[in-house]
Image 1: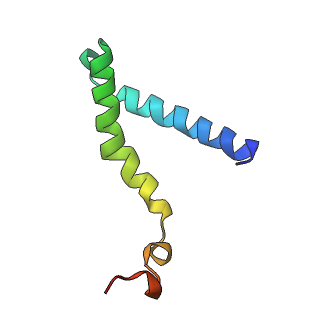
Image 2 (image 1 turned 135 degrees about the horizontal axis):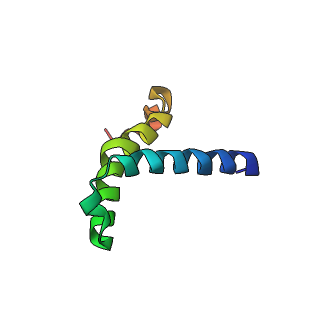
Length: 69
């Protein structure tokens, strides 16, 4: 990956982190376990579904030779 793309990813990730931080209950931020739980919840609910969109239907369709029938 080139440096420009990496820099963009890092900037967007920091912005996402700030948005999710604002949506986290303050009491979850008092312990390492609470922080880990909050991160996991946010990633599963908001981040992972959006990252999955990079797979286009064309790419996700198996080729004819890939089917086990």
